[in-house]
Amino acid sequence: MKCGLALLLPLFATSRASAATFNVNNEPSILKLEEFRALGEKPLIPHNVRPHRKIFNHKREEDLEINVQAAHANSLLDICKKDHHFIEASGDLHVLGIQCGNISGTITFVNYQDSIIDFGDLESIGGDLIIENSASVVKIQGNKLRRIGGAFIIRNMTSLVAVELPYLKHIHSIEWKVVPILTTAHMDDDIEDVTSIVISDSSLATITGFQKVKMLEIFDINNNRYLESIKANVKSVTKQVRVHANAKELELELPELISAKNITIRDTSLIDLSKLEKVDNSLEFIENQLTKLTLPNLRSIGGTLGIMQNNMLSSADFGNVTDIQGGLVIANNTRLEKIDFLQKLRQIGGAIYFEGRFQDTEFPVLKMVKGSAYIKSNSVILDCNKWTTPVNGRAIIRGGKVSCISGRKQKTQNISEDGKVLNETETGGNGEENKENGKNGLLSRLTSSGTSAFASLNIVSVVGISLMLSIIHVAIIR
Ligand SMILES: *[C@@H]1O[C@H](CO)[C@@H](O)[C@H](O)[C@H]1NC(C)=O
Ligand SMILES: *[C@@H]1O[C@H](CO)[C@@H](O)[C@H](O)[C@H]1NC(C)=O
Ligand SMILES: *[C@@H]1O[C@H](CO)[C@@H](O)[C@H](O)[C@H]1NC(C)=O
Ligand SMILES: *[C@@H]1O[C@H](CO)[C@@H](O)[C@H](O)[C@H]1NC(C)=O
Ligand SMILES: *[C@@H]1O[C@H](CO)[C@@H](O)[C@H](O)[C@H]1NC(C)=O
Ligand SMILES: *[C@@H]1O[C@H](CO)[C@@H](O)[C@H](O)[C@H]1NC(C)=O
Ligand SMILES: *[C@@H]1O[C@H](CO)[C@@H](O)[C@H](O)[C@H]1NC(C)=O
Image (cartoon, rainbow, N blue to C red; front, side, top):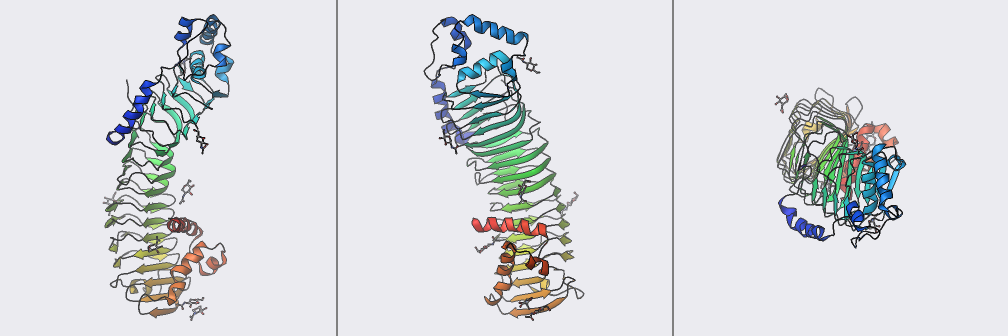
């Protein structure tokens, strides 16, 4: 058997899996047409398979036989062309398989009470496959199913342990949510035309089977608490990459990824984005356990770059980034001593927000920050003058305000749009007085709905505002 490595579960999940598999093996085998033929008028039915009218309406098996032959003779049978099939029991699915082989519509499971979903002779589903809200199903299987023309949706299937569809190669999109004990998923290794992958709340331990997929719209893997490895060769993600709340040990490897619309990565321990060149929208790394974050080929970020609460992070390198069109938020990475990893950054379209214990900041070629700047460190070594002393009479911060607070002193300046320092205040340490003008002022203006404050102070570009807002919002609610 061609065993698609699609989503493989190794070690950890084994104990659960074997327990669950035991149940599977104990289930009576699923309804087979041959059983009807052999048993004549009164078929013996496994206790968990409910009789179904479509079968029992055929008083004689010969009728069924004729139907099947007719189906094969000309596959124009109405049932095969129906837009929507509602499957209530395994018999329904079995009949569909032998009558049609290929169906053009969508299949939805409704009130399905059996323990196994077996696609039998079904080879292709033209529409979606929707399997949801059944606590009785432990396994989904099918040795002929090759294609799902639409979405493959599995939702709220709390007993589902395994998906065994080893020849399934063509799927338009995958959306699996709330499958808390799903530990094995085998599909064809060569899946390449899938456009979107969402896997949430499962017990899968690895997701490594999408090696041939080159382009995706969405890659969203979250709340899979045993998931320790994600590997994919995708080159471009046109909407979103989102990875969060999986196992803390999660290693995320997307070594071929070149461009993405936006990327949010949380709770991982290793990130490989070594070929990433361009992010159209925002790029966020939050609460990861990494020690190192290196994106050597990244050149531009269309939105905000956020690096927050990565408590182990001690070194970073974004050495080829020249342009960040949104804000730059680097906050609470407690082991990061220097913010000096954006050596080629020339321009920031939004605001700057730095917070933490860093002792130094170094932006050798930064020429312009269109928003304001809030910089706060507990360090007594941090030199605020770097940010508050204009070079050649003009400040690089053009958004109206610079606040820099170090363990030593606090300095706040108002700055005109063309970079002239209008006035400034300076106090001796982590004073409370000017906080309003700095962090809280910036944050409250960022979170207030009124735009007039922005208009007059030119705090951040609109893009910057919304992106920073979402980041700060996330930070606050957590
Ligand atoms: C289903 O479609 C495939 C591809 O078009 C074809 O090769 C196969 O014979 C069809 N199967 C049936 C049972 O009609
Ligand atoms: C999940 O499925 C169960 C039946 O297994 C149902 O009772 C429950 O309402 C479903 N939950 C949601 C959120 O749909
Ligand atoms: C990322 O992209 C998705 C899809 O386009 C969008 O819904 C989401 O709001 C974006 N997130 C950010 C932070 O821009
Ligand atoms: C910048 O990109 C070039 C070309 O890809 C590469 O050789 C170089 O190492 C990168 N620089 C940094 C600091 O990562
Ligand atoms: C950084 O940590 C401090 C103290 O825990 C917290 O008040 C602040 O909101 C955090 N900042 C961000 C941007 O997460
Ligand atoms: C700072 O300058 C601005 C613009 O000239 C002015 O409106 C504001 O009152 C000044 N603030 C202080 C404290 O001098
Ligand atoms: C900046 O200007 C505002 C009013 O425009 C004023 O309240 C504030 O005190 C000024 N800040 C400094 C440092 O002078």
